Length: 195
Image (cartoon, rainbow, N blue to C red; front, side, top):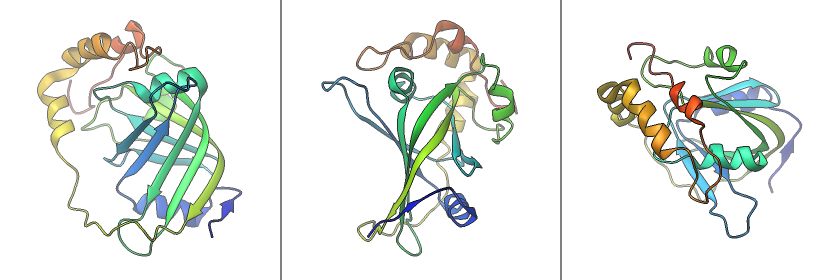
């Protein structure tokens, strides 16, 4: 039987930090809209305090998470143990999109290693419900390392080409919801090790 928790305590925080992948779920308000679930890696999830999570959004082919949050702020982050004892945690909450043009950006950005990945946005989640479940059905997987594809793509293409892509491809979600503004696309920050 699953349990709920009042806060992200040290035990839960330590467990989160041991995981190599997490999943983000969002949906538009429309019943005909497309639900989105995104896998995330590259050590991009942070516990800010006992009721707040944040993850670095370094860009991708779509803009669903950002568009859904801008419409309704609903989000769930799920992690499941791929090794060791079985366990699943879900963190439901209220998500906020923070881009490099926002005042709160610099304070949050320092929470992340920015040497290899750029930043399209940071997603900050006010966690309103924490629950676990058994995870008995999750198979074992061996962690072999992070894929170099995203850092290589970012390095080879450079920030200007990525900004142009974001402006063209990330303005609207699949359902036509608002994604990035042109100013937010232009504010994309490349890795700190080079642009």
